[in-house]
Length: 465
Image (cartoon, rainbow, N blue to C red; front, side):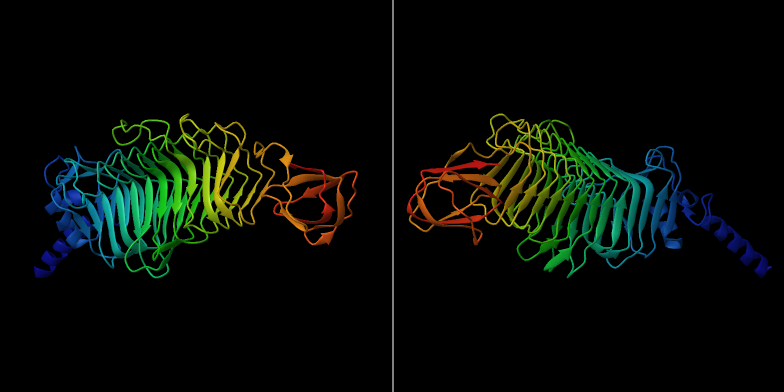
């Protein structure tokens, strides 16, 4: 008799542990109604039996009165889809779902997270704490939260194919910490109408340098802040931030913004159009800032590769790059300068560039010429083959005392010399014959010419190519 009772109890428990999708515990079997009444106790009763929970389509939604804190490695919350299964928090403080310290291999899938009251500053959709590792959030919709998803540390995790929209702060706020690694790959998410940035990445804690992950194929539109923002600190640098194939349209502050204090960033094959040109944010009533670049890289970021992007029709210039050792090539930057009152209405702006390569960019048809504007001194910088550049009209070289040294600018030049009495002429250290009738010098970027004379040449014109 005892054996039969034990077998019956085991069969009943086995029935609870497996549902029609296999291997997950159905929260409705533990009393979760999904009718708008508080299901927190029923959900946590199921979680005490198994960390892998299935939320079938409810009558209305699953209401909770406290944060669902996932503390067990391998925890999973799975629904029938973001239009069918929704969990709503009935409280203002704290996240809807928390992935706690030292837990790993968490998963959220096919489920929507909402809130029945306005959140306070801590009312995030999902909060990943500390050392949560190897987590995956996919096919999730998050709306009406402070930040849709807030990462406070954690490594080797992925957020993909999710819809994060209409939140009071950032869509995704990734605060990365660690001595060397901080990978969170954000792939193919749609992030719209948030009152902050679409994606914001920062370094926190005791990190000195953090290697970051990939931001790939995300759509960041109509956010009040930037579409994508990566911002480190002097002592907490973000290295190797990769933004590739993202769509950043109609964001209030700008498309992509790098202020990383780190090296090795890449901004490749993104489309950053029409930023700062329309109302943005959760309620779609935040006025356009009209101070938005398509792509903006500040001097704290070194050695950034900015290539093959479209940065068109932005309120300010298409691409703004400051600092050293950047590569800016093969970008399309046209029709920028929608804010007709702005002074920044060019295709590309290079601010005090040092060892910067800028080539093969289309900078035709912007609000102001030249297509590429250089502010400050350009040092060891090459600007070659950019349709629409046209930096200056032909002018004369002002000579100094012999031997006179002339250094070409960042773009190729043609220099014409004639007349006078010249005893020696060198280009980049190589002797060149001087013809007093007409000497034509084709100079590459930053070339150096030394002219030794007793009488200055009377013709000394230059044309910028």
